[in-house]
Image 1 (cartoon, rainbow, N blue to C red):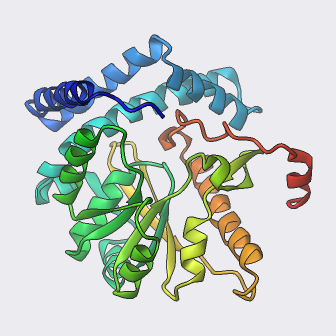
Image 2: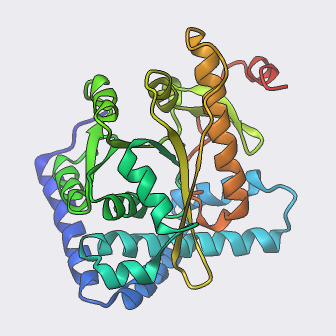
Length: 308
């Protein structure tokens, strides 16, 4: 990948910083509305990412009417805009804001226990995964560790990392020593994986909305090598646009851990199926704009045989 110039990196950072600074001048409801309008404006100019969104929704829900899909797409774009406003708000969240916009279900005590006791959390791009990290840090009073890729722009990377650090979210970069994740878990910390991105050649293929999707086995590998509990966590917006947060424990396969590939594929398939079921319940809150199905196997018929 071609390295970008220092000048371009600073120019990009300055533009984003000024954009965020201006939006922070507005109260949150106004900022959210402005970001929603901004997202809709981008959608109606048909940017490549939003073309991908439309294509993915059409593939995922072939039996739905065009009217249903158009409404879903529009509301999904609005939610993406709102998530931008939520991200900008994160460093300034106070107790009153937290009580108004965060709804942990079934109750805050249940979430507090899993975040305080430590373990693995697997998230998809459903709802607001950024605020799930804030919720975990707020309720537990501890730092939460999340695996991320470094951004191409190192200046932007430091800026985003600083914003997240202020909310008890610490980064573990995927190019760092893999043992770091195991070490954090063995010390009783909570480590989060957002693993429903296109894993390209690094992943294995699993069915997802009727198509094969290359999926990371990292969470499965870590879960197999530790004795900590594993939770699938997700969020979605209610009719007041509050974020509702839920979780469920993922049962580990009753397969000998020595059967590495079989164990990890069974574990991964279990959380992928949970994610798909939750997206179907809250389709407007999923990040349809990412190119989840871009990578395809050379021998799809052989891969499908494993799941038939």
